[in-house]
Image (cartoon, rainbow, N blue to C red; front, side, top):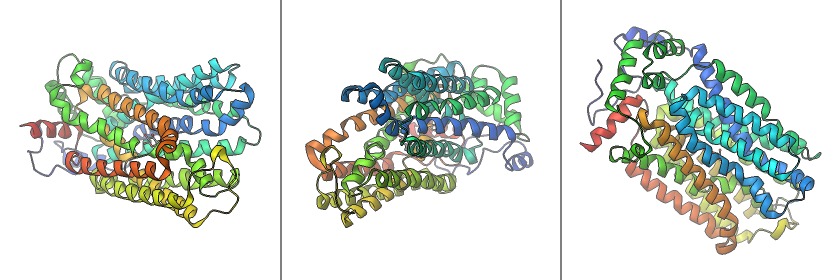
Length: 488
Ligand code: BGC
């Protein structure tokens, strides 16, 4: 039986050793076909998450024309995806623990498809909002189940990349949604914009049907033979028995019925605080305020036509978001989580301060989208560049790394529910920030609003510096052991 690394010693940078070094070496080669299937499930889940989040911005115009909505209903149509996601993420943890990771992803695929069809065919706003809620629930369930699935099936040395791939897919989904909106905006074809995601939803469902189940979850359900079969399928050549022993040892230490209260018990307070606070910091540093209101910010910065605003938003925000996430994927398992988080937050903080300063020269945004008559001023250009830096820094740090850490810090038996708590907190924070951003600007102005986000970057930096340990290259069992050692 292998031993966990003793307290304070450097932990192995790769998977924990097995009895057979040779087999481990061979397994470290190419991805198996089934591991690729796992990756496809993760990519589709993230892509749909991003698409359904981003698509509404372009669809709203046509929806308003069809149903002549009051501002309140516009807000509901926009934001109830987040509400659905909040509930979906809470249910997602339970589902992931009861049905298994794979079947939960399957359920998310079904919800994405159903929600897309309901929205596309909606004849009144009640049905439309119901469709938004269903899609939101799918987003929430997928947001819990897919990274969990990725974290549990990826080899330790690739775990960061797998979970980052999920984040990359979210950004690609947002980017594609911006593009689809742009293509269809002339015809205001909102039904196609919203309904288009039924196709990838169905594909996710089909791929999840044949995808392997998480061996960790199967072990938890006392299905060792199935776990061995799935592990062999996903990691051919790996020494299966010692790994299953590791998982069993970890699970035995945690034996007993899992109740929600156990997520909050003292033993796991440290990982819970890490998960929850990272989820909060990811949102209160302003990402979605910028993603949702980019057009308005660029309008204020002097990008006059709607086309120029959409272009800048699509490429400076959507495109940069995708590209910089690739940096995280390249470096997360080499440089580690802490370096990326701490470096990214410095860049985010500085760029927010710069945006705040630039707004002193730009002044308040033109009310109700009023015309800016000139070309972008230098302060406007500075704002755009600073926002590019902000998005780039977020996308290689607080975006993917937060989800990676959230999915690796909890012990297996509560992981599903604990990740759900962190994800729900993340949605609640996202909802709060996007609901209050405009009122905040009204109350304290652009400059102070961006400086407030910048100040939160500072707080997040200090908190991460002192509280978040490095987890790169450690097996999930080793990370769990670390909390025990920290307590003794
Ligand atoms: C966040 C989302 C955000 C997205 C932007 C994700 O990590 O959870 O709220 O919209 O990044 O790429």
